[in-house]
Image (cartoon, rainbow, N blue to C red; front, side, top):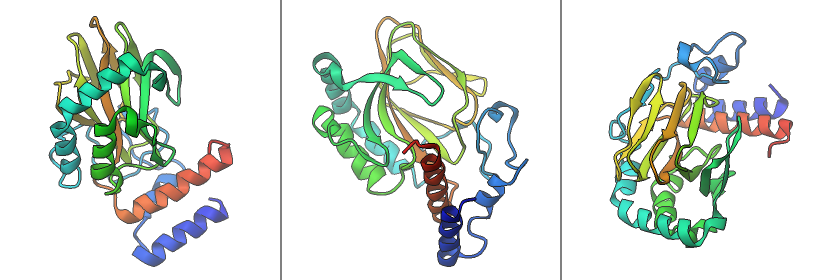
Length: 250
C-alpha cells in the first residue's frame, strides 16, 4: 500500500475501530479473497459478502427506497428517455466498458467520476432528480462508479464478463423493454419486466442480449453492496481512488 492509502486506512480505524476494515485488508492479501468459480475474472473479491448472484431488490432496507423511487417514476422516466433518444441523440455515446467499447451499446450518463452529470438534469430531469434524492444524497450510490441509461440496439450482445469487484452491486430499472431481451448472471437467465428493478452481483459472470426489433433501455445504478459498512466504504474509496491516480485514470 502507498503512504496515502496507509494514512487513509489509519484514519478510518481511528474513527471506526481497529477491526473496522479487516475485510478490506484481507482482500488485499496475496492469494486471499475467496471467490466462486464464476467470479474468477473479477479483480477484487472482498471476503464476507454473501456470494449470491441474484438479489431481491426489496430485501435490503437500505436499498428498498431506491427501488421504490425509481419504479414509481418509471413512466415519466421512460417518456423523457424516449424524447432524448429521438431529439437529443448527441447526448448518448458508445458505452466504454473497462474491457471494451461497443457502438451498439449506447449510454446516457447521470452520475460519473464521483458526481452528478449536470447536463442530464435538462435531458432526463425526472431520472436525475430521483437519482439525486434516493441514491446520491443518501450516499447509497457507489461514488467509484456510475449511473447511466444503457441502451442495447437490436441484435446487440454484451459478451460474458465479470466486473471488477463485489463490494458494489448493480441495480437495473427496466425502462423500455421489447420482446426478445434477456440477461444471464452466473448461468441463470432472466428477462426484465418494464417498470421493475433487477438487482445482481456483477462480480459474477454475466451477459445480456437484445434479440428484439427496437432498442432496449435500462437505467443502471452502481450501489454499495448492502453488506458493506460505512468504514469499509470509506476505505474502499480511498484505496481505489489512489490506485486510479497511480494508473493515470483520474
